[in-house]
Length: 197
Image (cartoon, rainbow, N blue to C red; front, side, top):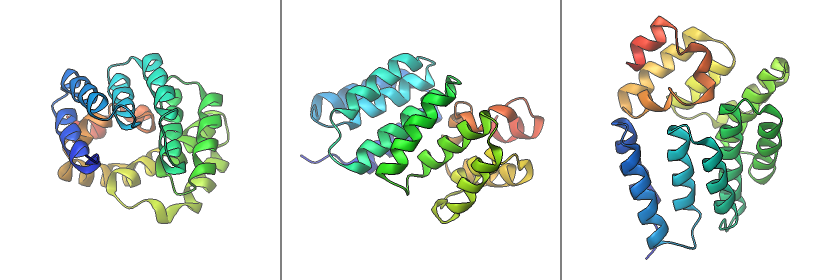
């Protein structure tokens, strides 16, 4: 039976919205049991462990997932997730390496673009980060992505505008912003906290 990735994403986002990370681990385990040859269960396991602050374990699961990837797009998704975890760990060079791999495999990988821009900014290459974000403007289709881009570019008003819209339509976004490294500089900001509380 093929994997219904959309249904899984909806279910996982519902669990994220209520911070049921143990439920997410159980669901990821079910995906692994039902589809042992797929990368997807391992990817969700890693995403959940990242929320739980267990980033080294998350990286291990992503590496296992990479061995199960069956396309450039899947490998790119995993590599960009690794870049994101390395950003959470402030391991900028590793993030730059994995985001480069992600974008080589799939230049339209939004997570790869944003993860790379975070690492570039953190290593003093803000102009390069801004150029990367600007050159991929057509890729940002939803308000959460636009909020991420504005956050990296330090455009607070734009970030708040898009974030407000994002959390209205997707309650799980109130949780993900607490973990995504793009928003780290804003987590103590009163306006940011008012939107994400």
